[in-house]
Length: 229
Length: 310
Image (cartoon, rainbow over all chains, first blue to last red; front, side, top):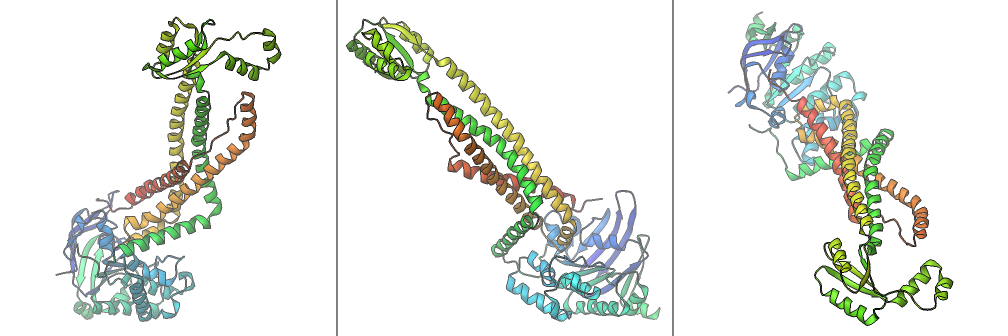
């Protein structure tokens, strides 16, 4: 069963702007794929529909067995705990330490403090941030901040990780490092959907690519086809 | 809906969240002393005004109660009636259903009272014999006007004095004042609610980005709302305490001149403070008011951030 299914999804905003037009695709468990397209193609809207910042105007977004149309009220928060999100601007809480930022999703899940400590320190080690747990985000480099953002997104072991232009502000070396990190997540059962307009980076990763053009799914390129291109 | 792949620990986590909200909200209050003082000050004045008026009315009511003899009906007996007849008539009246009590004031007692009160000692001595009649002080049970009329018809009665009119007027004013206190209390309570609401609204605006991040991470409405509820409760608690402090200061400054004024009426009247249950009620009520104001604003904000159907 796909971890995510878009079934003829359209989104029209209140002002009449049509951001998505009958988009359909599936994401399999443990799959990593890219979402690309020009600015305004609908990438961010598509991600917002998945973490329920927006709702579709038509069609269905199904997450596992969960039709997101039926997710209302307090269940929106529960759904979001199954979806990790990484942003281009990290969106870290600047008055809290690295440790506290990463611990937040686990606190929200009501996990015990001891278990939180174990998990946070484990992921800090995995991402090479072991020495930085007490630092404030403002004391970190851009690459470190992005790694903290990723750590916070994956510490709760979400079923799906969404990344919106995660390498937008990073140099090529750091970008490659972050992408390698994403590529390692499917081994742990997390599917990864990365929105990026950096075509060079997308091609280098040799993963499935969804291409959006003016809100329509213009192409769905498999890794094999990408290699041949 | 399947759950996230971590375990929930129920009440312990709930308690953890509350402790976190409790401490962090207190931290926010302390970190912004001027803004906090202004909010608490405005709220305290809004609470102190109706409370002060209520205290004044309560004291006036008590003062009126001290003069309860005005409710008594004085029956001046005919001068030729002796004390035996007066005692016998008092016993008869005590048996009536519309009479609560009867006290007999003898002519000698009347004369002594007159001498003590009026400084008329020399003039009274000049009279020679006591001109005062026996007086029955009748405390009514029920309709005092009807009783006064009935007592006037007694053949032993020379004159019946019943000064209840001023007491009725005072009761009327006290009832009116009581209603004014309620109306003022409601209006100023609403004002206090709006003050807290506006302060919390500004706090929410300044933390909008942080709240957005928490929501994306899966924070429930309760988790986001809780620190603001505690913040409102802190404001209310401090404002309630400050309002009581202000009223205590006001009462302290009025105590001496009021005692002097009461002395001129031969009274030992002193201002009464709030009893402990009322003190506790004011502080707890103010905290609840703050909690409610914060809850309304936070709830409104959270409703606005929910995903809507296009």
